[in-house]
Image 1 (tube, rainbow, N blue to C red):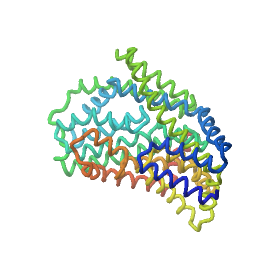
Image 2 (image 1 turned 135 degrees about the vertical axis):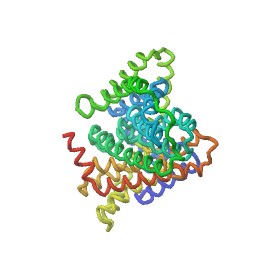
Image 3 (image 1 turned 30 degrees about the vertical axis):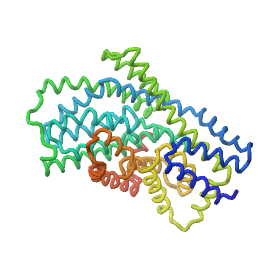
Image 4 (image 1 turned 135 degrees about the horizontal axis):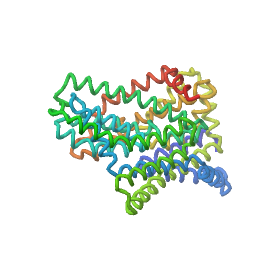
Length: 433
């Protein structure tokens, strides 16, 4: 089978399966099995098995269930509620103050959980009642929650950044640091926009009429200590080279369990429920990795990856045009597919070209991840749009699209800036050395 026919057959089948509603992991795995048999008969199954076992033995994957455990445990405890209350007390007296606090809360929650769904849904459940009570505009609230929640896959500990490190061989610590820088850039842009819009339209996000007593504000700092303990225990140990990502994740789990115990919320039922949910989410992610790994392995063994590499190398496009096309591919696919599947499908083709062209690989991977992040709130099928719909069932989906549009524009502008000026990320990441 020629590489051209293989490319059309495998990717055409994948698109058809997705349109029919087949799960991405099973679609990729089944297509890999069928095409391996068509190319080599029963002997072709070796590449599927080899790829699956190779991924199973990746030490980086062992960090994923640990980070998921942290997020699930935080969601089941009341740590997130108390943390939001602290932001609420300190930010309520300014126009848009609760939205500023909500954006900051979502960023901190992202640094504790490492995924978008936990960050978005928890922020919505905790923050929406308070903002509705104070007369905040529903669209302004939903847009802020949806946009800030996307930082869950960008701000470390991000599970998708771990997958990128596994696929490219890059330092997890540097990818985490780059993701943190990009995430803080976007968060700052969100906060500036919220403050300016609330200043000129105070009716959209009115200030609280009564300021909380200073004593209550100081007491609220206690609720910040435990989340900071979790974040510091994970990120600082990675950035300082004290621990590997897997070791740091294990320390984070210990910190979460200790925090829950200190608060008197730890029980056998709590451990059982958190462990069950962790296993369920981990299983879903693992099957996507296995399915995508098998798909890429069969495609590569049939000469498909080499064909795509030569196609890109032989094009008349300039280096920057190729980079922009790769980033646009991530952005567009992010509107329809799971980020992990996109990473496993595209980076084996894109990354060698990036290295050959002489671009900084960490910079490329962070901007690539940022575009996946943007895909999360891009109509029509961005994941966070449906999380927002579940939080506000009475809100039409078209209203949700309009709610996220200003924040989508901010993310696109920030992403374009980091893409056009690589030195912003590269110079800051260099401090880790």
